[in-house]
Structure formats: C-alpha cells, structure tokens
Image (tube, rainbow, N blue to C red; front, side):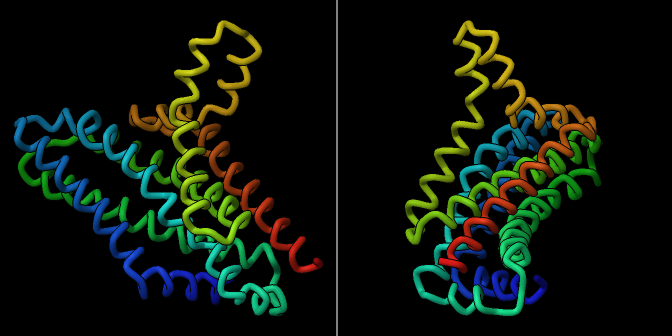
Length: 235
C-alpha cells in the first residue's frame, strides 16, 4: 500500500492537478479570511470562511478523484497492478490515501490565515478546528465515493461529473426531503444525511457517532471499489 500511495501522490504533483487543487483552495481560504479581517471581527470566520469554503472544497474533490482509477484503465497499467503481489484492497487504499492527502494538504494550509490572525485577534479555535475536522471527515467520505465512481469508467470527465452529481445531491438532499411530507422518506434522509452529521462539527463539537459514520462510509466504498477491481482481475 505504501508503494501505491507514493506512486499516486507522485502522479498528482508530476501534473498540474495537485498543484492547482491545493493552490486554488489555499488561495480561496486566504481570500475569505482577508474578507473577515476587513470586517474587524473574527466571529465571522465560521460563516464567511468555512460555510463558503465547504462548498468550494466539495467542488474540488471530483477533480482530485477523477484520475484515481481511470488513468490505469485508460493506459492499461491496471493489468500490472492486478498481477502484482499486492492485495486489491491495499491498491485501492493507497489510491484513496493519496487523494485524501491532497485534500488534507489544501485544508491544512487553510488554517495558516487563522494562525496569523491569532497574533492580533482571538478567533474561536473550537469552531475552526471543528470545521476543519468536519471538512476532512466529510471530504474523506466524498473522496471514497469519488474513487469508487472513478473505478466504474475510463473517462475522467464522466468520473468527475458523476462525483460532482453525488456531491451536490448529498449537500441538498436535506432541503429536498423537507419538501416531501413523508415520514419514511424523512427518516431515510436523516439516516443518510451527511450535512446533519457535518453540522455538529461546525458548532465546535466533536461527535463520535458522526465520525464513525463518515469513517464507515470510507470503509464501505473502499471495499466496494476493491470488489470492483477484483472482478476485473478474474474476468
């Protein structure tokens, strides 16, 4: 898995994708923190910075994951991986971790303006860290879904559009469900709701159940992706 992780991470930064995604998110974090500084109150950080950056972060994830599995299929290098003496789950986990590392790097750089602001203001670090952890957990779950979708096609564009569609659906499914007066639908949406579990972290609280939910989603989609790759190994 370590070798796969290094290989995939190297591929991100041997092309513009890794640099562009990290630079774009870091620049947007800097821009919105600057807007907060212009207001003269650090209390606007959760609303102006993280509420807005959450949407941008989810839009960048399809770009990060679109090449994770499609490149090997398109270039026929997946045959080398499938015949290598390494487990399929380790291959998928390595690719997932490489994609997640790019997202982690961009999100962590987004903390630098808050560190700089702390020298002359008193930002609410509880809410900032809560948003940071929540974004990583939500993002990790979306990355695992994106890697799975990437395994279903050889087209990066289709993989990106598919992941984008799922991301938008999960962000707005709560709003759609609220307009449907059906108890069963409401219960189901509440159970699958990413946004409801994420919102707990935005309040500066840590929810073990929400963290377990996101980690479970990651594990499930890594497993599903591994089974998808396994089916190609035996076909």
